[in-house]
Length: 70
Image (tube, rainbow, N blue to C red; front, side, top):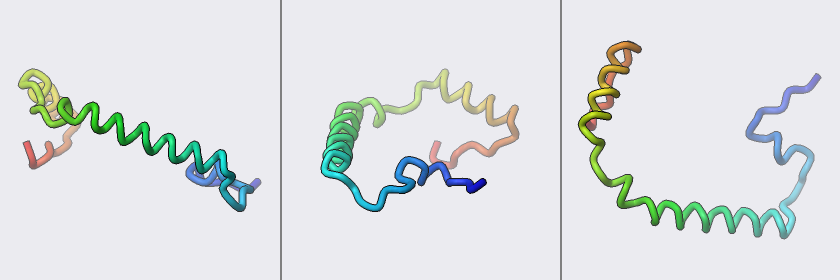
């Protein structure tokens, strides 16, 4: 049995992009761009203190190092 890596599974056996798959890719890129623009204000806000405290506690329990940019 031949294993196909998951990132290639969707395009396995296809040798070229069709016009509709190219249009779908462009549409998805446009949607992604619009969503990033829509949520920029939310993602630029600081993490609420309660959530930051919880994340710190999870790092302590899991033994992970917290990110240095906090």
